[in-house]
Image (cartoon, rainbow, N blue to C red; front, side, top):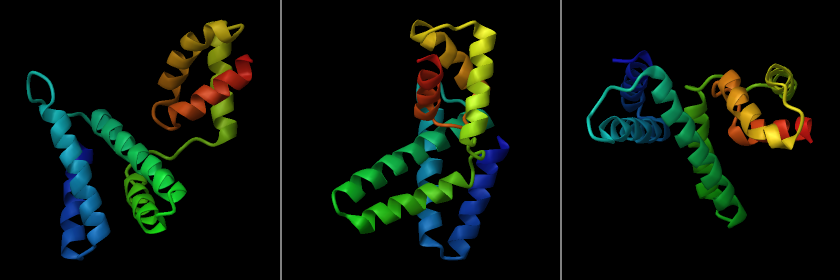
Length: 150
């Protein structure tokens, strides 16, 4: 069993014993998403740590978007809950890149790929997303690529 999934289950047990309702609910939700991903498709399989991290990133993104939606609708209590769940999930994800580090990675990718303009954005995005490896959101990477190619 992948280490991250074991860690999530152990932390769920700890949260349940501590009667930490927010952490318990959040970890149950993410473990359910991992289980659903494992049985999706034609054959059940065990997810690797990278795949579990992809599920965590997807769930964290859902929480951020929900918090923004609730906040703009004036539902501050639900927005705060979604934000708190996102913070719990962020503890299992790698630290996000600073803007300067992201700019340096994108500049390096542009140099390596020989990109010269916006028509090369797809090529640069593919290589940049591989280099970033989940340490920055795709929208941040795309904005930086656009800025440097534009």
